[in-house]
Length: 166
Image 1 (tube, rainbow, N blue to C red):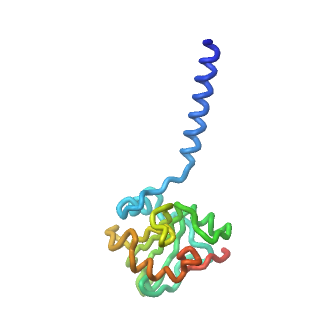
Image 2 (cartoon, rainbow, N blue to C red; image 1 turned 90 degrees about the vertical axis):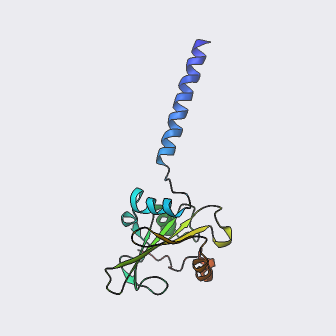
């Protein structure tokens, strides 16, 4: 009886250890809330350390409502999907546009799109936000102006920028 109990305890220990290691490797993302997303993309997993969206290395010309010049970053979840040619981004994907002025130096705003499963099925499950460089949220959540504009790209998972090869 003692041997069976010991074996069960050892099995439970290794199962717990395996589960813990699996969870530690899982990429955590924030809840769909303006302050939590800002903290995550600037402190916990800074967007400047992400890769550029495939085919959009560095700064490129933008247009209203975004900046005169843009940089488009994507977190590892979005990059992996884009590089695999996926037509729909998986939950946890974040695209971050850094919006610059005409001088190409002045950061005017940061505008992320964050895919959250079940958040807003009518708009592709995207959480939208616009931040001042200071982190003040100017808009966040189910932002009507973002949704209405991006609706024309619904067939491309609400994303304007095409996925092109690096």
